Image (cartoon, rainbow, N blue to C red):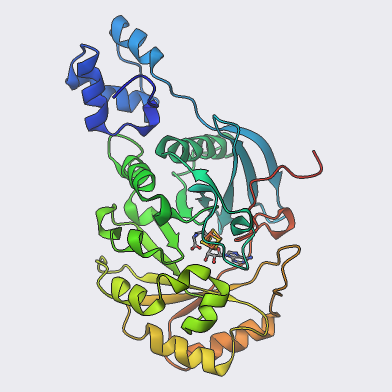
Length: 343
Ligand code: SAH
Ligand code: SF4
């Protein structure tokens, strides 16, 4: 491990190695982690402090903040190389959740998603993902008079997390390690389009919640919406989901985007009920958030209700996602990582 690495990408074993390489005791590892993540006192040894000062620990910088009328905040970060990426702070019933990105852009090219429009810029590194969380947590703590509990995380921002497997894995390990951020894996949800090379390795990750973006139970139709369906078809994804290790009260969330006049017929409801019946799952209906220049339309409330009823009567467990932050383009699928035109 060289000094070009960032402190916030080091797991305890890496840090112990770095300490030994710099002629310090590996026994300092826990104390250094507590100083980095829990703001405890710095180590007392002057030479260690001097060496630590040389270990880069830059974090992404906030360059813009937008506040929605519903309390959602969209935050634009600049990364070390000038790339930009967005995160969102969501406030559902006073429970705070941060929506993190894992890539600059996305390679999956879904036809309804703003992020996929420009393709993949680059993968985020673990320290950038962890860094965004640290900054958002600080921001939340500054804004709440009481120290709020650590916010939950959803990996539903820009990018396909399982297409950046190694860095997302490292970030999850740091986020959940008791010596680092110590989040419960159940506080974290990772959403995937079904990128199979990553999905089949999901069990290598801490036991976080899994959400799968289904959006159509028909392979042909899904391919029109999600081009990677051609490489990783629903039938194969289903096999991977069926063998997913789940904790006793853990369910797979099946995200289902409702696109007006596209995927909410009785035929869809039946096929969706059939597709999900042998999975320990819950369907999350997401009314489409309009994206300028895209042809899809948001369904009316009645349409969503009707579809929900069609599923419920078939015995499917369903919930509905309330759109947050659409007035500041912070809702799902609206993130582009671009500066707003008003600044
Ligand atoms: N790449 C991952 C995670 C990021 S997208 C994935 O696709 O699952 C997070 C969620 O937002 C996905 O379910 C995605 O389908 C959904 N989404 C994308 N564009 C949307 C839009 N315009 N309106 C509503 N949801 C959208
Ligand atoms: Fe990528 Fe997810 Fe958007 Fe598809 S929906 S382009 S996978 S971020």
